[in-house]
Structure formats: structure tokens, C-alpha cells
Image (tube, rainbow, N blue to C red):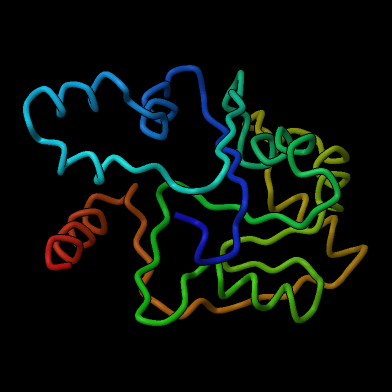
Length: 180
């Protein structure tokens, strides 16, 4: 999963209606025993979990991306961190999209956007903004606040981006994935 980019821990922020996400990354002893009984142990290797720590926080109310990020403050502490959005995929023949951002961060020690790598100062900006008219905490408002305090780098990611929240892009990505 993330270990190619140097990721050691993952925090998944989810709602209480998305328990299947938690189950997806959990070990299934029941399924493993079933496969053993059916002499299909060779399939167990496909159930292997990533070799990183995965933690979860439930977002009680959908109050925007900024609020979801704000919930990760205790998890992140004083370390820089990356944000991945579950409906945003980049297919690249080169380096993983997140790794491209991490490389820019490592050179500059500053936050980077395309996707996102943030320094922990973003949390103070998230705390200082007010909810928008839609009652959400907008990440863009926090980024604007952070820009008043420090330079933020931008990186055009090498690769093709697919938003699987868009039906046409989802279908196109599935066609590509079926060829791999």
C-alpha cells in the first residue's frame, strides 16, 4: 500500500455508515479457515494485509475535508503528513503520486499541494476558520490561512488522474485496471 512512499502509519477518517472500510483492512480468520477447509490455501496470500499500522477515527458528522483532517491532529502530532482522498486515483509509469509530493517536501520542508503534504501548522489554521455557509470546514480556507504564515509549494503530479466519483472516469479507470 503506502510503503513505497515511506509511509509508516495510516489514519482512515470515516463515518459510522462506512464499517465495510474498516472490515476491508482487517484480518479475516473466518475466511482463512474456510479456504483451508476447501483446500484453497493458495488464495490466502491474496488476503495479505499491508505491512503498515492502520488506525481509524469516525467523523461524527460530515463537516467537510477540513474537519476530517482536523480529527487527525492527535494521530499526527508534530509530524508532516499526507492526505489521500479515496475517490482520487493517479496512474503513473513513474513514481507514485504521493511519493512525488513527499520528494518535494523532503527538499523544502514545506507543505505541498497537488494532492497534499502538510506541516502540522495546518491544524492551527483549521482551528481558526469558521464553518462555511454549507456548515463545512473547508480545507481551502485553512490553506489560505497557512499561506499567510509560510510558503506552500505546488507540484504538478506526473500521471493520469481519475476521479472515481465521476462515472465516466470510473469506467475509464476500470478499463485500464482490467488490462494490468
